[in-house]
Image (cartoon, rainbow, N blue to C red):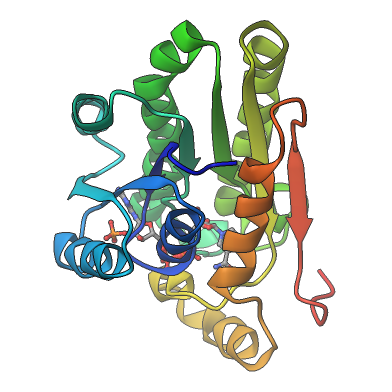
Length: 246
Ligand code: NDP
């Protein structure tokens, strides 16, 4: 069903974004991959091409609105369509609020919230005009459950849950744009590497010990949502490792 469709995936240089680019490409989509580490994008693009897929890549920092706009423009110039946007880029430098890691709060707000708004803003007019499209946002279990040390991260993911529902109300019935919020529990990726708070080393070690989800598990959930027929709007997928309690 997504064969020949064009999908933009932000934060595709590692983890869930990387696995999603591969999964969507394997299902026949043309994939446009963005992130800041261009060497990683280049390696992924080669892998996709070697597998017979079609790929476009360009440096993308989602905190820069102009880069989001230029990325979408370049994709439209190349393929004349954008059918799917996966807003995946994100950071999780957990810390206790009392540590006052203001730079990290700013980064999370800039990437996890503003980056999603800028990337969506860059494609929405096109999708609205053609009366079809699919926006997939990476929220989290942390967009449903709040924990100490996650107050700011959880706030960003609650924001994404709210934004997803707002988009659905504004666009789905009127313009056929579908909206999916993906809410993973612990996934084995580089995400924990952004944590700098010393007192959370134990948290990170425990997360490493548990049988976490794999990036491919989330890619499969995204594939399910975007492969669903046009009348089916898969709004939320909450997916935890079986061993995760929180
Ligand atoms: P990774 O750290 O492996 O991937 C994060 C991606 O985001 C990287 O490709 C990184 O690329 C990209 N990124 C970071 N900053 C920017 C930026 N300014 N502009 C563009 N891209 C950026 O983590 P995950 O794959 O786990 O995370 C993907 C998403 O899934 C995130 O939104 C995360 O919050 C969410 N999630 C993850 C969970 C987990 O347990 N892993 C659980 C729930 C949700 P680069 O550095 O090259 O720019």
